[in-house]
Amino acid sequence: MTAAAIEIRSATKTYASGIEAIHAFGPSSLSVGPGEFISLVGPSGCGKSTLMLMIAGLLDCTSGEIDVGGHVVTAPETSIGIMFQDNTLVPWRTVRGNIELQIELRGLPVAQYRSTVDRLISSVKLDDFADRYPYELSGGMQQRAAFCQTLVHRPQVLLLDEPLGKLDAMTREAIRRDLQALWLADRPTVIFVTHSIEEAIQLSTRVCVISPRPGKIERVIDIDLPWPRDLAIKRSEKFSAYASKIEEIFHGYGVL
Ligand SMILES: Nc1ncnc2c1ncn2[C@@H]1O[C@H](COP(=O)(O)OP(=O)(O)OP(=O)(O)O)[C@@H](O)[C@H]1O
Ligand SMILES: [Mg+2]
Image (cartoon, rainbow, N blue to C red):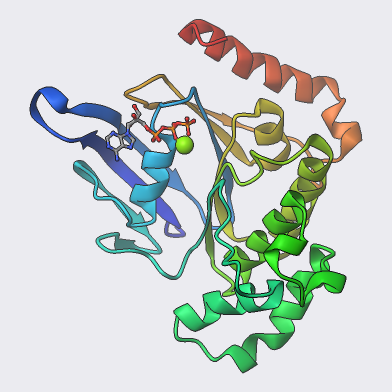
């Protein structure tokens, strides 16, 4: 049996204590196989970001534990790639400089990553902007550059917390396509948070529906649709059936 890439075992998070305590997440368990693409969908405040931070080792579990790559997470996991809704570009470096910063921060040799940086910049169509500064880019272009930052050290595990949330619909669709192509080519293990049911179905091998706070992974839905998932598939009956199923679950929670 192949070891899980991520194993969440009865993880919970309670922020603060006493009368101030907020039970934010769990207990929940989930085993994620190598190369899976898992989406987390759930109402605002149900603990999705909390779970992502615990997987990344940026926040302790209150109880239970999480394994990444076969070991228990006890400190920040620098091997994984993380992307949050707000991008992390620094204003005083160009697109290329920002991407290389991720290599430098990890103490890796920048020269050995030159071709990877070029390939990534090209894959998100920023070739003409590689030497421009963030203020010279649109919001969508900044997010594309941040996407390259997340990927440059070739992480086996990607944690993406609403990375497309702030983008307009067209840019969002384009980056979604880039993300799917990249995932199909390299097959990293991905955990992806989104508020869009459609986006979750389009991208995922499985969609986890999280209940309102304290959030629990209550339903895990296998998405059995062919790859790549293009417009024709999004318009298919089977796709709509998955969307209706997930909407009904949210309706049951009283959040739709
Ligand atoms: N640092 C913190 N201290 C105290 N409470 C917190 C902290 N961070 C989050 N919370 C609480 O934990 C709960 C879950 O928050 P979290 O950010 O994980 O939700 P989320 O599912 O990511 O929501 P959204 O969809 O709005 O991003 C919320 O009730 C929030 O107020
Ligand atoms: Mg969040």
